[in-house]
Image (tube, rainbow, N blue to C red):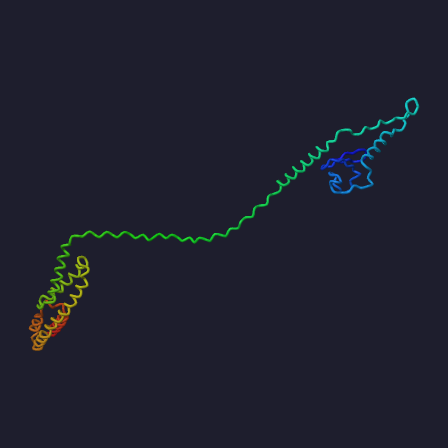
Length: 274
């Protein structure tokens, strides 16, 4: 900190406390410390501080103000009172200490005010992707269906199966032409009842019926030839009534055959020739 004394600024070094005048500080020097503390050689042409102070005091003590005319017309010389020098005790050591403490506090505050450098973030390898396997629920197997309770045998089915066995045996052994048409009727009835009582046997019944139909036509053809020849002879002799009577001797159990259809055509021919 500097003070002015008669146009000359006085400084006190914050390091050693020595008083330094402004005339001893060249332009560009640090004014808070003296030249020796800054490592600078003092200029030789500067007057010593003690001589400059003495010279200033002499000039101050011998100087007088110009004479002023009094009210009586006489000139009076006013002598100025010499200024006393500053005899207050210097507190250079305390000032230097306080200045050093202030600089230290400011330095600490600046250090703490600076933003901290962030710590380097350690790079970690990226985690390998985990393959998510979808969980597939096992197929639900339905519980097995309970076994049907055993049913009592149907008496109608039982009886029908017995009749089928008898019909098959009778169709294989029949030799009486008068019973042939009755067997054809029994086969037709069995085919109608089979889907309700024994559906699994319907195909078998059809095979039996077909085999019996072949035998049936063979039996009818065996009767056709002798009856047809005899009726034609009687008709040629002029006996049409006897010829028709001969045609009616054809077995009634074979009249669903093709042979009987031909005999009926011959009968209509004989009657038409009358």
